[in-house]
Image 1 (cartoon, rainbow, N blue to C red):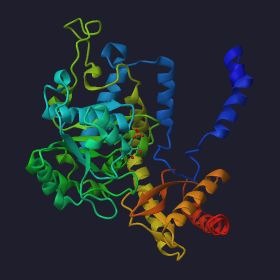
Image 2 (image 1 turned 135 degrees about the horizontal axis):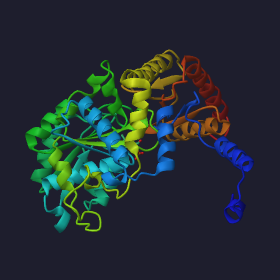
Image 3 (image 1 turned 60 degrees about the vertical axis):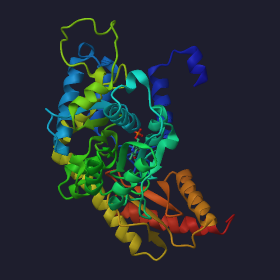
Image 4 (image 1 turned 135 degrees about the vertical axis):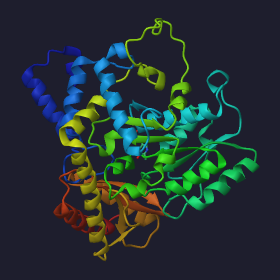
Length: 429
Ligand SMILES: Cc1ncc(COP(=O)(O)O)c(C=O)c1O
């Protein structure tokens, strides 16, 4: 590769050879054995959109830079708001490059809601965010970036699986207020990345309303369950949140990245960013809506087109069936785990994430062995699992996202795990 950088001159045939070698060394998300990080298994529509964007490069944060891209984004976010149960007239939305940026944006909006002068004057002291300890790392990163400091994220009371104890949220907010802290926002998981479990949104929302606190729901992964009537109950209460993160590049089969920030009151989103760029905005007459007012990015890719083409290809029902089928596969896998004495499961799955482990004696050796087994499978290139540390133990986490992951694959995974665990347990451990 270094030679090519200097010399250039790649031909069709060397390009083909390079792409083949490149793909051979990459991660194959469509492979039935891929069950690791929560990356969408991209569908044809979003791949075509990437190609269109790659050629046209309409960096459409201003309407005049990409009118079609803005139109695609508006129609997609209107659809997403509708799925939550919010009206596009009253609510606001923006697509951004990823769930981390979406969480940062939503918390920035929350910050403006409570401190309208923050853009000019900066943050006061002693401001905190309450979140479950297993909230995605982007929440503490957002706190640091927003000037609260990562230590300003305080843990909400949770059960042993890391689910927020909804009945204790009100008291937790009150206790922090009594201690002289200002609670800027509460963050809830829907679902939590380490476990795939949903926080009790309705109970949390009611506590937040009672205490007058902004509720942000991180539904980066689980938001797509809104498409499936049989799964919507996991998100009961989400419409009472103030802001939501929902990643299309997780369960809507959209290539990385396309994340939605949805805000219940549109004014909160439109007032959170303040700028005076007279080289961009010098003309009272704008040809259409400029999205830059709602986002951290100056220019951005045509993210709406990826989601739109996936929807236009499969239809809402097609994507709903994909989400539902991966939840059903996770449930089947759970039953397989329960049926085998070699394994134990963490908790009945509520999503397409399943945490399980070898039923050995927990402890540091067992934790190390679970990591070694995962690494060995990855080395072999047959199965790629994730891993979580929950309830003081290390678990394997299967993220069942590929449409090709079927029951025989899952049975083979369990057999391979038993074989590899036994083999490795006789060596260094
Ligand atoms: C619950 C949750 N929130 C936020 C994120 C961050 O998303 P991204 O990787 O797109 O920044 C993830 C990623 O896995 C997640 O699972």
